Length: 71
Image 1: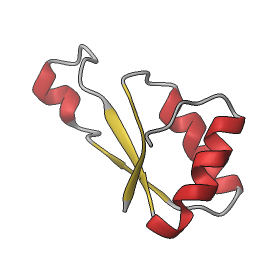
Image 2: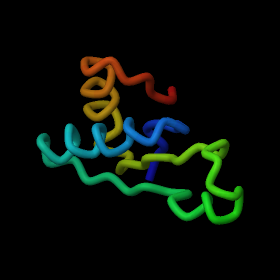
Image 3: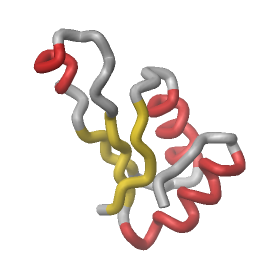
Image 4: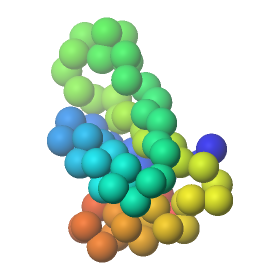
């Protein structure tokens, strides 16, 4: 698995997942339950991971949609 993006914006990851699913790219979200640790104020970023083999295609898809991705 390779990190595709990291964000504190609660709307970005659901949007990214829909885009990835539309291209049959599986994604896995990490740090989903960290809000319980931080007190639900949204300062800790969530990460979206994809398979190494899908990373290039997923990155291109995110950039095309205007979503900044990790290098």
